[in-house]
Image (tube, rainbow, N blue to C red; front, side, top):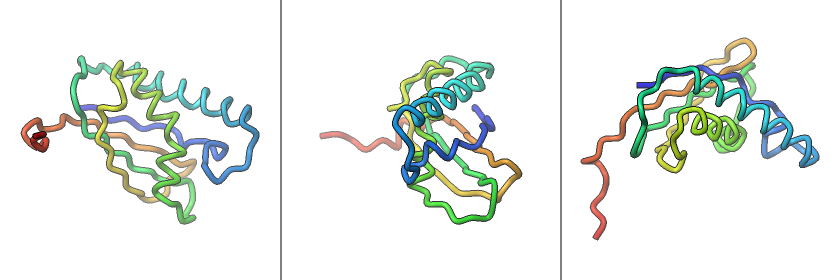
Length: 123
């Protein structure tokens, strides 16, 4: 349904980074805006309901990355995508993978429909 390639999140957004909150906010705002503009440029039909949200992190080097830290580092990007597509990110069912390194790093996002019949029945 929707595929996009986003820039690698700034190191200042990592939970392990020891930066002042104002610096982190500046980078988060810029990254959220960038991801939002990329998502806004897509010709996405109206999105409603739950969506599969696959994220593949392609790091800029062969260094080992924690998947939970990568997801936290990408939070501003995920929020920007939701802003650009006009969908609430609480509807994303997220799966993450770590791909092969690419120069400069990249984040590949795939958004697909979530099958309604696979939801568990709530008593």
